[in-house]
Image 1 (cartoon, rainbow, N blue to C red):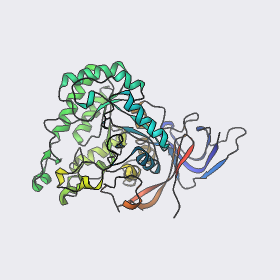
Image 2: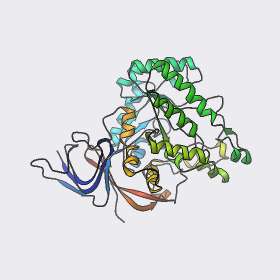
Image 3: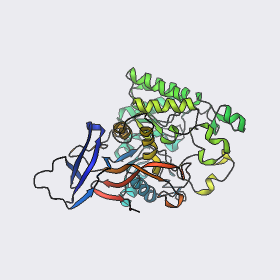
Image 4: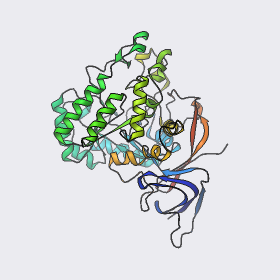
Length: 426
């Protein structure tokens, strides 16, 4: 049993209200003490964290590994390695792999591949319907037994009765339903429907495509009693709708992709396909509303919405390119930017990346409580750096944040007490 002490860091554990300079003691892959060493503790390894933040390993609610089925874009080994370099110890994998995660075999496959790589835990979401086709329900009981932490349909289910039945089935299994709020009849464009898209001649996706879906889904949540999570909100009105539902006691939560907190529709004026995302970048007032939702806790998690692509996928007219950003390596610094902008304190920002996602998933993670798994992220909150394509750990280099100044450099990541990443000092 390797014994590790992390010395002199600012320990921030939002789940327990901890924010103090103290040591962290690890034995056998678990946290054994904070501050005072256990009796007879002798460290086999010391990590000096003076001037750095020591916090729970980050949890990302949406990261596509591209494996199985799209290994030309990325692989579980490459993307979990990128996650480790970004302080992320647990990743939630949507079910739109090829084949879809609608059978126990596929769910077990992705978990085994991640375990073999050894960089991060991969937590699969099972498909709500077979093949994500929105017709026949998947065997959610078997998917739960195979390790799926929730059930999702990343493509909209147009038939409300089928969605209701899926929610009822998920509720009987105690599974959270992960909902992508997009009305299929309104969501056929590639940019926010507004002045910018009109000027550029791009087909738009109105804000109503999201809010109409949120309204329907909330009605079904109240009807079925299922726990529901709204994935990657993009509009201020949807945030207010979720806030109202939570105030009224509905069992719902929400997340937002980190890039939505800093970019708006104005970014697409040069037709740069790195800004082609779904849901689309929306207005400045929407961006402000999303930031307020994160600061107030209505949005309890910030995710990467990591979607690595090969270079050719972004080499076409804007609407013909593949949507998505390679985003693991910018999740922490983009969230920390909210702190630098005075929108929230550091502990709250870390909560949106650790204890908040853990509560949504219902897993024992996102904390430094003695006895918990020693999943730890250590980072220098002040170090300025920039992301260079040649230095990215992810195989996907499709990001609008290349060469943009960022703050917050991960120095160490520990997974169950094992150092899986250590930044090489320049």
